[in-house]
Image (cartoon, rainbow, N blue to C red; front, side, top):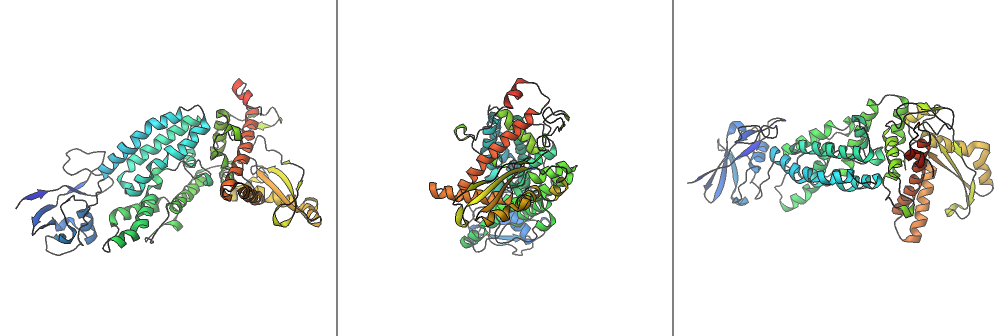
Length: 496
């Protein structure tokens, strides 16, 4: 009878080493488990040391790590040296889980090949194009498959290395000196106030849990004896629960989870952490403002000159600094346009006053007849509004909408003349819009969709992108005009 020795592994701690290694590999250590496989009565039997097996699940998990291609499921059984049958039949296709191997594989097949592409993006002369390609093609999307099929603690160092590469690329594209908090903000979704460059290390547990639970029902249909392998899933749950708020923690698996929903809870916790770590009312208010509807639409627009959607690289870099609240100027200084103080962050320079326009009538607006539109730009960072902005980023636009309605009984007078009164209020510092404005834009999107045959959501998104680009581009020019900088490049950018 021929004996075959196979190497296996079992996780012991955060550090591990591959079986048979004399030196640590990838700064990890593994306890060794070397099951012995015999060809007995036409089917292999795997013998385990009883002292190394704590539970039936552990035994089953360890056996799955052993590669025995000749195994036939109906002829397989697992026994301890006590002779007790403790596990179900071993699947025909064994599951490999070796931390050192997984980490090397992710690093060699995902992280290393990404370096040339990330450097090429950083070298692009157009920052807006580079930023769009980074988010959609070369950031976390490159590792989505690896994150969904590999236990997160199996390739943690590789994921962190990839995140560092993406951060370095963003710093080059934007000319940004990123701090820990600004990188944390950049890694949030755009709707959450970030740049949409999700951290693969933070979101890997969410991706893995969503993948495992989503496929569980299908696997059970194929194999009624299928069960989710506990150790990696339990560790993924532990990792996930460590990066979400207590009310969002998962203590028992549901039949299925959406990765989008789990990642949203991760963003929610990171937002809370970011706000807690931020000092000063203006900085806290800014974090609320960048989360408002439409505030990040300029980041998703295709840089098409013929559609008016392109932003010059220098202005785009100014906008990135504004969104991440990084200094635009070395220090506060004299503003040449208003004889006031020019804030170094560029967020309070041009919004000491509210900008208003006259109401304009539009006939045939929807099912409720003609409407009068009144446009205004407010600021959530004005001294009288700022404390309320810290609690609710939409406060400034919402309050100013109500003021427009009540001022000189404007809404009542419009109604008496058969007009709807629709105040369109933008928050000027971050570029968000009030609730009435968003409702109007969605209505416009539906009108455009009816004419073009495209979806309402697509047309609304394009409309929002155009408005956002216009507002943000002029914001950047307004900031540049007030900078204490006499360089020709900045002076040229200040003109429309």
